Image (cartoon, rainbow, N blue to C red):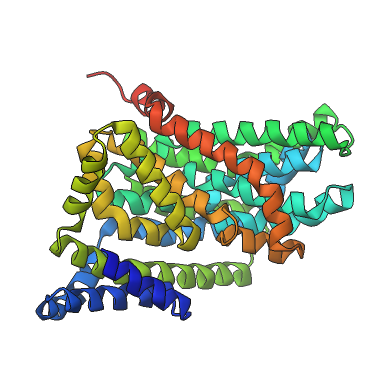
Length: 426
């Protein structure tokens, strides 16, 4: 595996896109290991990597989130969050975390959430007197909640690659997502009290009810997805189509969706989906090459040679994923490491749903880890703050995520209680 990582790192340094670096690195790795004759089979492997029915959920969930956002529902959720917590110390900082938690149920992407919430909340927090660097850091860290709460694109890809139940993973991520949301709310309140950040005027109860009523259509989307899948009304793939129909109907009913907005949503979804599926296709070359060379088995054996203690193995896997997540986006990390991860999960006899939630949180934490987290660059561009200033504010919240990661890895009930509770006894 070391030759591939060396080739891959070299391509990244040269500025070659990740997708091409993955595919070309896999090709060269096959050649260097004496498997050049297998190159002819790679087009077929690439097609097999994306020729999976469940992958239809990715463009459909992305489109549903885009239609919701274009239909003005993200603004309604921010209004609802402000009605609930805006009058507490810190005002809009608490609203930012709560809105991110609510928004997680419709976007499916941490980057999309950081962009949508950040463009609105970072300037608003600055006007209230909250430092821009802290506001940007809070938006970035709150975006980690998104991939944990359904619909999650990262969980869908893990399910496709591993064979784990995507529906079960959707349910398993809800409790960790809420724990992270509450933890960040507590941190934002403590920070506000400590630095005497201002609060917003208290919203009357009648206005709160109006805000709730306006936000209900968006809040119902994750309920419809999880409830429909769990009750067997529709499959995960069908739930994505239902989400699109629901988002379109809500936007049209509220008279906020226009033809131009729908068209722009379709274009942005097509672009995002094309890039993601191309990465999946190219990365399948890497998975094929690593499997041919029996790298997963060798890696697992090397781990066991260091220690057969489950805690030590989990620690090493988490460190590896956190490091890779600093430099690659989550989907690429999972694709490259999936053969190894599945072997490790088998060795330590860890429930695949729990393992999948742990991996999901791991790779997403990398997106907000200084100095190269993708979400950090997004919020820095929005806020106009330096990466150093935002990173300084991120570090305390980073350890909150690490604490949740340890909780997920060590306490199975955190992820498995809700799926087990929702599964009727035989």
